[in-house]
Length: 76
Image 1 (cartoon, one colour):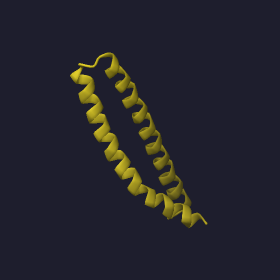
Image 2 (tube, one colour):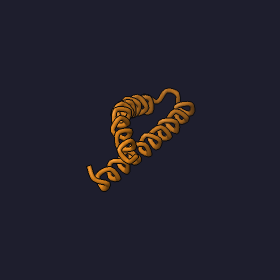
Image 3 (cartoon, one colour):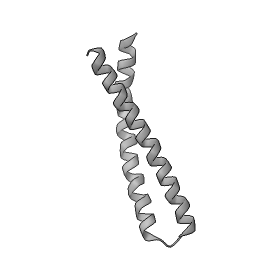
């Protein structure tokens, strides 16, 4: 694997990490809205779906972390 490939993979992992953080923030904002509108089924449904999607992304990201460690160890 050449350095460009490694850099590309690390950039993609960083992008995924930023996406996870942004989705976490969005879910928290919708939870705040739920306090204001406690009977809203749409907000509850949105939070549930986004949380499930986020958990899937985190699972994949955690498994990609192995790849990140391999790349970092290869640099040494």
